[in-house]
Image 1 (cartoon, one colour):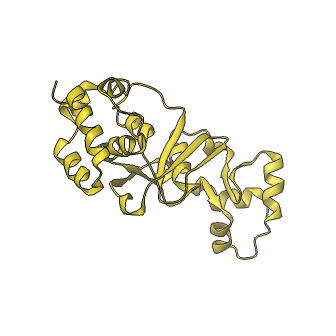
Image 2 (cartoon, one colour):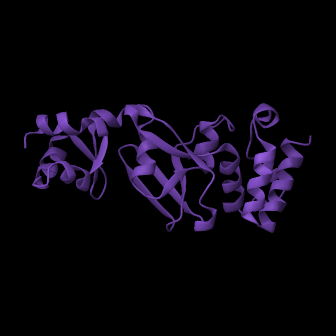
Image 3 (cartoon, helix red, strand yellow):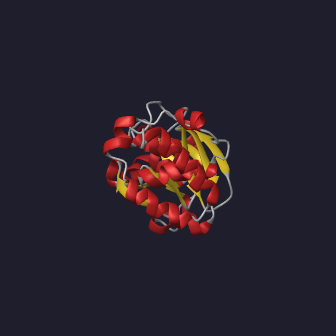
Length: 206
């Protein structure tokens, strides 16, 4: 297959794996991917996973790749907090949670970290629109914050909570405290309850 034909058939995907290609073209010769990698037409995201070079540069491509290269997973923690405007910092690494083991990957789109969470806590995310009519899975704001508190036992004091630099206007007007309390009950974690109480004293009750 010529690259121009491959691009015409699959470019709408942005990123793809070999199985997706073979569902459309069962006799696809995988060695073509090696040639196209050498020519710079495509980039490798992970073993068996690829993206078109033009697509990699699009804003938001990293979010799709975060979901794509390690599944099941959803964007959470600092990346989700930054997405919602809950923290001021730019987050250089895309952070997600997964029911699989903790893992990290790097490719042309950046660095991707995945933190393990128990399967019974793998909830609290939704699907939103992304580029090229694709969707991404990202934690709801309240779940992203609770995921962070749950997975960061070093947060032990009010000063530690202040170091998160959560946006006070967001916490006062947009953060859904009732939903957070419901999620907190589902976690059923005394340690998380303690950390969330510290956070409330800094950002919600003051």
